[in-house]
Length: 512
Image 1 (tube, rainbow, N blue to C red):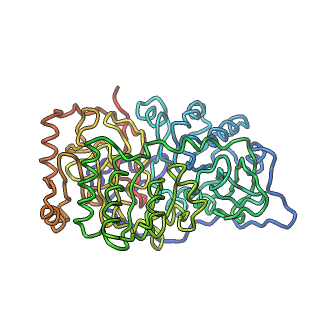
Image 2 (cartoon, rainbow, N blue to C red):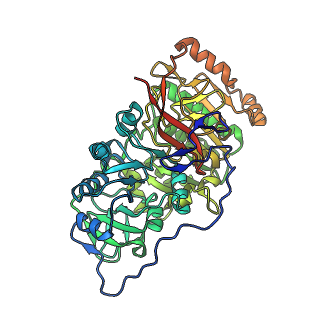
Image 3 (cartoon, helix red, strand yellow):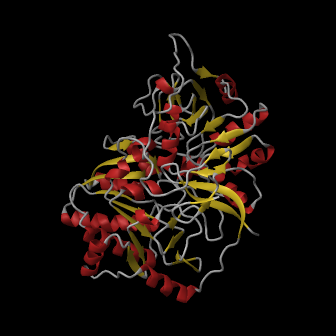
């Protein structure tokens, strides 16, 4: 074991690969060239369309020990990954690594195939039962959790080499041109799949809406696609929504939202050209509503909203509050509808969105991002991967990416969740380092990172309830008490990778 700069002990080698300990947000400078897929040709008269998913898998040459990927734009409505893994088992193919953009509770169906040895490694974030069982010691599989930008980087560098990518394509033609805008499984942006299409050795487009060539508009081009297969259903787009996409009515959430909007205004960033990102939760959307009112009142014209897009941001676009939306993932069906209709609602790849090893990601141009947390510590480190019981239940998403890029990264959270304090001495798992977090807003006060003394003065001048983070923590624990620490074994269930490829923390198995 080695200790990284945050005092976290990580293995020097994990799943057969040497690991680099995290030191600081910009410590690693890339070198070398991008990974390149094999050069291939497709001659006039050749056919890409095959009769079934099974035929496509056989044609791809997929075999034992290879790596596959899928995207999660259908989120908990996705059917493709489960279908692929079932066929792999039927074909007797095993020792497979999954390097999808994320896996969700719906993918608990692959658990028996993990136990059987069909799937032996996960190079992706996990949401739900698979992560829980891994941290309980009831599922033995190495897991590497990456951010959205970190995944794009790992494929670009060849650190993660995908042999066969399966891209769920809600609208696709026989040559492989596709988009996610139209069809019964429309999910909107296919932003996470662009890197798979670019870097995977073989690409299989899977569609339940095969249309005449050419698809228009083209989100992912035929030049990247090896095979096309039509299936009955890709999944249920109504299950894209995994959280509330309505403004909270909870008084605590509304108070947090009002104060957060005041923080943004006092920061001086709320002006023409303002760029903004929030999550899809009720408090985050309440922040957006308060910011919206201020923009209307002051006649501010923002530049862009980014990230996972909700119908709420679509409304702000239509009101003229933003020039454009930069959409890597649609969070609800209103956003899906908008991206298929509006020229100013743009699909972007995960590479453009958040890859730290390119010539400039969209997150670098963000003024303000609103983020959540399962835990925060007095050093401003944030945990979004594990719950207070130590179970790995959540993907990193774009948390570390946006916090690193934005001028102002704000965490909004209630001070008490499930009778437990949100602020503690040390988080169970570090997802995002405290040096990238600027402000924490709870209903009991606003904590400002010490690196922003001038901003702290501005917030105090605006008569906002600024407090030292240690004082907020004490106020909370005076109510809740200090929770009993979770006990862990020395066995590692997963590694949490920072966006640059270094290891920021290890998730250990919980002592039951």
